[in-house]
Length: 546
Image 1: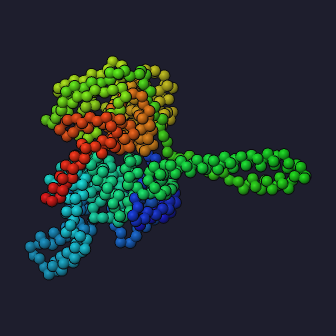
Image 2: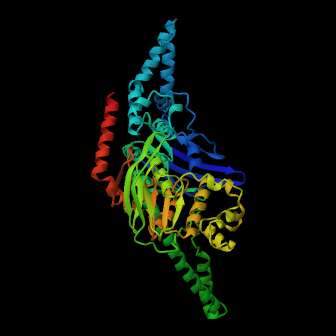
Image 3: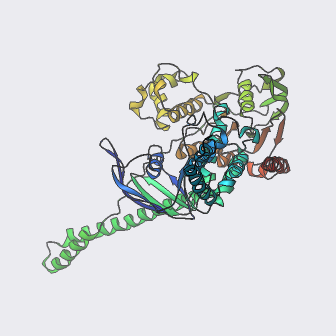
């Protein structure tokens, strides 16, 4: 068990947390949620001991081991992958290294023998002989192939390092597991594997994630951070949302009844306070009035942007035709003879492990890159708005937010433009901020404002949910669901894809295309995905055997 007792954290004059008391017990998985800036990651750092609170203490059951997901992707660059994973149990790794140093001595003494014997006993108690195979199993489950297990961390890609650090956090069956955005940069097989691992994990888990589907699948409880307090709910994210909305509704209804009673008492007192025969009753009602207290309806710190894509022109029947399109990058064929036709009701999710292929395809459709072979043709009634994965060029200037958005608007009126910015949670004073200094989430909201103001009837979005908080993801999700035009998009957010797409296109590692008119969940349950999972499982078992 881990508990926070009277935790207060002040940053300057602001209290990020104030007298927080909460217990996290064994066998439960807690989803820690809250608006951006509410302090989710900060609270995890307090629990893990990386950050000292201003007041209060964190108490862990004596003898229990806590593990957390490291965020520094370069910290272990000089170490082999397997060693990095085993470092998740610091004491076990320490024993392994001390044993190696003793056995490597040329002048092995009696004292060395005694020490080695002590270490061997502790090593065996900690299941040290299974350490490498356990680490390899975790790595294989997350998609790190066996030939990389003895490579240096510096040789891995960024997404591979994330998987290794996740394996490190999971290693050795920790009693308390803290995970901050564990699904970031994971492919679908790795996310599914992690979900099953956490569902079957018997100890305490506390996880921060913007992935609603993931939270719904793995969490038994939800801890909601709002205004420096943490409210605990039994149930997953959807249960929290329904419960919190019901609670607000009940408080509003209760306050409405109290307000009606207050009005009734005030009217009686006003009419009869000067009447001698009614004075006692008026006095009694005054006392009753003083006892009525309205429930404090403090608004949530969560803010939902208003995202509404309205096409200036209705789209025709001819939308997009792609014929025999191919593209090779750095000697690798990422698109191989792709052909399809889009209809005016299509909302297409592009999926697959080859993210470069999807980004390349979107750039070709937007005219930013030429195919090696084949062609594509947009319908004459179409107009397009594009959300790039890499937005660096968009904001590499000294324009203010208002001036930046005005350049993309047919109507150059500042009030009109600021209306779009206001919908995306940029108040009036933010209009003079320079786009160069915006945060990742603010840049995403600017790009969505640009797409809204364009009036396009085709939206192309490459990972639009990156850098967004849960509230903004929900608002974007709802905006795309009701959008009357055509959408081509990719996202790692399962619920986002499932609720938006009616057609799935998967670009395979060899550049070929699978095209299915179906929902995402139906596609994942299809024969194609079952065959791919079988191949993945066989490869994992072969790696484990080796």
